[in-house]
Amino acid sequence: MQRPNAAQYAYGSAVVVLATAALLLLTGATGPPAVAAACLAGLVLGVLVAVTMPSAARPVKTPGGPAPAAGNDAVRVPAARTGEGADARTGR
Image (cartoon, rainbow, N blue to C red):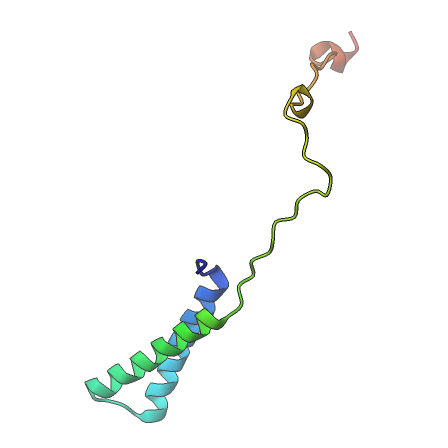
């Protein structure tokens, strides 16, 4: 199983908070067992939403050409720059 992404955490957490608040308000629960049951139901709903939400995993795109040869051609070294410094800026 893949690790959950940020959207799954956000949606799951929002569902836990909203579902628990809605259950507590709609049922009018005041006793500890009823409050615990509403919290457990909200938690189960939040986990269910986070797990069933599709992940945004995208396959890695690779270039269609062949891989570069492992030799001197694969390593590029920038050429030394000439004409930089005070001489190039002032024209002297």
